[in-house]
Image (cartoon, rainbow, N blue to C red; front, side, top):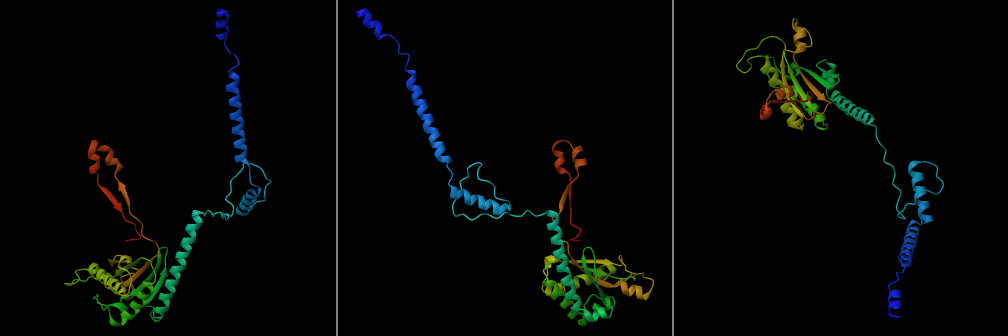
Length: 282
C-alpha cells in the first residue's frame, strides 16, 4: 500500500498549462477592449475636423472614414500660411524701392525748380538710383571750396528731403582739367574732395545721418564733355549727389586657396586674406 501511494503522488499533471493559457487569453481580451475604447471617435469632433480641413484647403468634404484623429473641441481652424515666391518677393521689394526713389526725386525737383529751369541743376535716373548734378558756379567761387551764401538754401532743401529717406548718399566732386596749385589745393584732387566734403557737412548738419554719407573727389578724371572749350569745362565743374538705391552689404572675405595649398603644415594660417567691399558703398 505504501508503494502504491508513493506512485500516485509522483504522477505528473499534464494539464497545468491550461491555467497559463487562460490567463494569457484574459489579458489579450482586456488589451483589445482597451484599444477599442481608445479608438472610438466622437462624431461631433470628427465633423469639426472635417469642416476645418475643408475650409483650409478649399476642397470638397470627403466621406467619413480613415484614421481616427483627436480634435480639441472649440479650437478655431488655422488658416494656411501662403508660401511666397522668392523671385516675386524680390521684384516686389525692388518695385517699392523704385517708388520711394521716384518720390524723393520729385520732392527734390520741386525744391530746386528755379535752378532746374536755368539749367544749373539736372536730375538723372540711373540703374543705381537718382543723381543730382549741380553746376559748381551755383555752389562755389572759382578755385574755392567755401559754399556761396545763395547756394545754402538750395542745399538745405535737398537735405530736408534726404533726411526723411533712408537711402545711402554719395557726394562726388568734379573739376575741369585746368591745373591748380595753391597752398590749400596742390591739385584738382584736393579741390574736388574738399568741395564734396563741404556739401557732406551741410547735409549732416541738416539731419542726414553720417552713416549714410560718403564724399569722393574725382578731380578731372570723369569729365562729361570735352575740356577744350569754355562751355565744356564749365559743364565738367560740378558736384554730383548720388541717391543710391542699393543697400550696402556685408563684405565677403576671400582666401588665396592656391597659395594656401602650397604652404606646409600650420604655415597655411599665415596666408593673407582680402576683404572685398561692396561697390555700392564706395
